[in-house]
Structures are given as structure tokens and as C-alpha cells.
Length: 268
Image 1 (cartoon, rainbow, N blue to C red):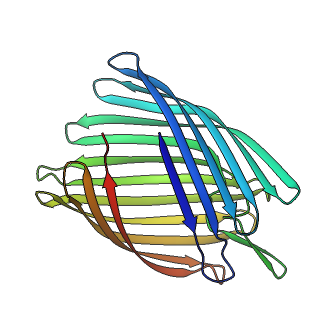
Image 2 (image 1 turned 180 degrees about the vertical axis):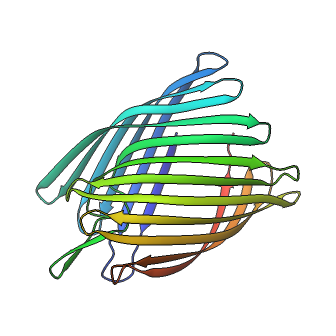
């Protein structure tokens, strides 16, 4: 069981502020030493400062199957979404699911593949313009997202590890029938630097192509971070990063520098 609250505030007149509450309840049953099945229900409530309200409910059946060198897990479910703005109500629904396959090649190397399909209102930051009016699809569109990723995890004798992944996704904006395709590459390195201190670094590249405007974007990101284990249940983390976006559409390019500080507590 989990609960989340998110508050987004955007400076200036271009962005949309929002309040979001997410609740999740899940139940798993161990049927055998190798198979686990369960159910999961999630509700997502968002209120935008434009007055629009978005309610999403998802119900999934989940499973995990283990073999000696292979792990398969996934889910299959159904999502309903309702958007309300004044007297206007828009309803959407979709079959959703995901699958993950992990295969151990040797004691230090794993290969993995994941695929998913979801119905969501949290999308990319693609803007579309009609005459003098600009619409931000991140806060105004229901989107079907299909994504896949394949990669490798490698562990070394000094307790460090490297992950390299290739990913692709397709987002279909239902209100505008716009399609967005994304292809990317990411890598992350983790290494212990002291008994309770971990160093990690990552880099990624993402290529975006938009069908209707025939426009293209490129996003490159790098970050560095440390995780300090205060005790068996509590971690303190910090990270800095840099994102660079280039585009063939004026006004869509940006440079972003960010800092993250967090606490992670494990109850069980």
C-alpha cells in the first residue's frame, strides 16, 4: 500500500500548475517456490490550475515466474480515465500491461528486456501551435504510450557495476491524433567509495520525432550522485545533473541544470 502527493508549480504564464494524489494497493500470493501472482489497483487524481480535473483508475493482475537463470514478470490490466472541464467530460479507456524478462548469462552479467503499454495524461513537453495560440500537450492530452527497452547489467570484482540500455517508445495523443516517436541510449556506473558510501554517474541521449510537424529534437543528459547509508533502513542521496535540448523548431531548445537531495526509508 502506498500514497503520493505531487505539487507542480511553473513560473511564468506558459506553464500549468497542478496538484496530484496517487494511491496504490497491491496484494501478492506465493503459489510455489517459483511462481507469485497478485492484483494491483491504482487511483490517480489531478487538479490543474486551469480548472480541469483528471481522474484515472487502473486495475492489474500481476505475476512473477522464476527459473534457474531466468526471471519473467509482468501485468495485464485495464485503465479508465475521465477528464472534466466545466460541463465538458471526456472519457478514455485502454488495455494496459507490461512484461520484463531477465536472463543471467554468467554470475556477473544479466541481459534484460522490458515492454509496456499505458494510458496516461503525463506526457512529453511537446508544444503545438495554431495561429497565435500555443497548447502544451503535457497538460492537455490523453496519451497511449507503448515502450520497450533492452540492455545489459555487468558487475565487477571491485563491487562496481555498469548498465547500458537501448529504448524506444511511441506516444499517440488521442485528442489531436498526433504521434511522437522516441529512441534513446543510456548508461549508468555505480561504485562503492567507502563502507557506507556509493558513487554513481549516468549519461543518456534521446531522439524525438513528431509526426504532424515533421520536427526533430535531441536531448542529452549527464548526472553525478552520491548515496550514503545512514543505517540499515535510511539512505541519504544527492545528485547534480545537466540537460541540453536542441531542436529544429525555434523556442523549443533549452539548457537545464538541476540538483536533487533525498531521503529513502525502508519500513520492512
